[in-house]
Amino acid sequence: MRRYGKHTDEDDIRSRPNRKGNRPRTHIRPKHEDAAEGMVLTVDRGRLTCLVGDTVVMAMKARELGRKAAVVGDRVALVGDLSGKKDTLARIVRIAERTSVLRRTADDDDPYERVVVANADQLAIVTALADPEPRPRLIDRCLVASYDGGLEPLLVLTKSDLAPPDKLLELYGDLDIPYVVTSREELENGDAAERVFEQLEGRVTAFVGHSGVGKTTLVNALVPEERRRLTGHVNAVTGRGRHTTTSALALPLKDTDGWVIDTPGVRSFGLAHVDPSRVIHAFPDLEPGTEGCPRACSHDEPDCALDQWVTEGHADADRLYSLRRLLATREQTEGD
Image (tube, rainbow, N blue to C red; front, side, top):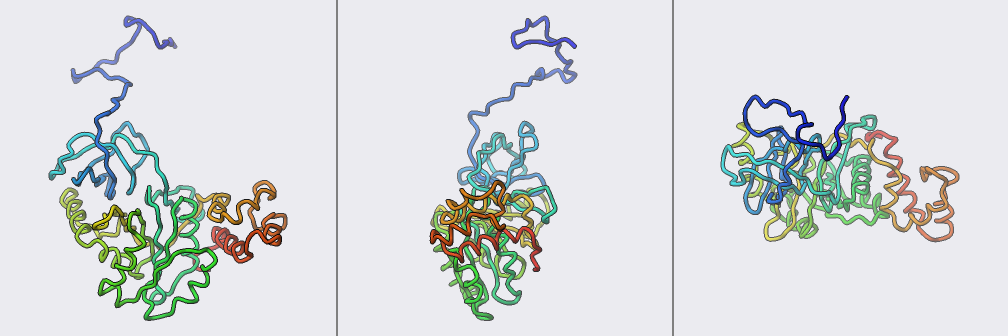
């Protein structure tokens, strides 16, 4: 096979015939220096709804991005028709580096991880205190994914009129997680939205929770007009109606630069992608004590240096228990 260097003569180059008679093919890709910056609001069957300035634009991923996929929350560069008019389509040509990622797998044996949200600052874990009963194992898994992905957790406990929050709050007290407790009446009259809003200002917050806990009701109360505007735009382009929580959707908070991202209700939260060594980063009081741990320490074995670290008074024993409980959630099913 004949090989060519970078500086070959034109006579040495074999060009492929172009049957269409237009521009010859080239491996040089355009730089798209004039591309507009935008944010991905939702993804639906290969079409991405993006916000460019104040305009909602429908786009598709450019071929040169290969298998790299954009998700809700991604900051992207777009070219093409950015008018936002019906039946127009732009192209996403670049995806900016992500500051955080919320990832999950279908189960703990699934090697394929799914990025649910990018660039969120906070993960609001919405849980009902009754009807349905709270699932601490699912909360633990969401916390692990939050710490692993670089998001700060927030507990939102609903339906406090049916059951008190004390027992559940005590379970997570040593983690120093901020929380908001609401009742069904507060969800209906808007008081819950007002109190949750205080935790969201100026931040990008992803909401997770299983069906029936009041997650979407709360999100609708926070940003009612924006959901109708954006989902209406999506439906007009795709030609089909879809339930608003079948895919993640980013919505801007009124009168602030904050965002909420409503995600579909989850039945399980696989953690096959999580390296246990990264979870320790969420425990700054314990992390220095790992310097004496054996290589690849699981932090729950006889030679773990964290036991001595706690004995010497550098951290509280309850904090070590919380760390080990979160790490153990990767080895147990959510119903345990």
